[in-house]
Image (cartoon, rainbow, N blue to C red; front, side):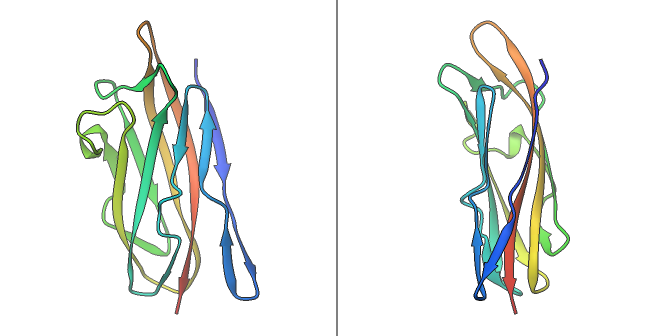
Length: 141
């Protein structure tokens, strides 16, 4: 069974103050959380993209099956744009966490686009899952 879910979280400005919704997504047997990502910083400052793939109770994200995460951003310099299971913390996981440092290149609204493919398993079967998420980032001059 294939699941493709698309969530695009936008940033809204109110009186010069960025307001952002937490970038999260709930899927079948898993949830994605990128709410610990740095979402406001100054040009030239360093931030961190944090992605947690959380397996639902009774399930785990397989560390033996393929796991791929692709990242892209026009306004941020990401230190890594392709992630695999070996990049996750902890090394032995049921729900992996990925951390990728970045530097803000230019002021304005930008985002980090994330595309992931992984397998969620219980004691009987593993299912391939995909997820896309866009994390808004506001860069001040």
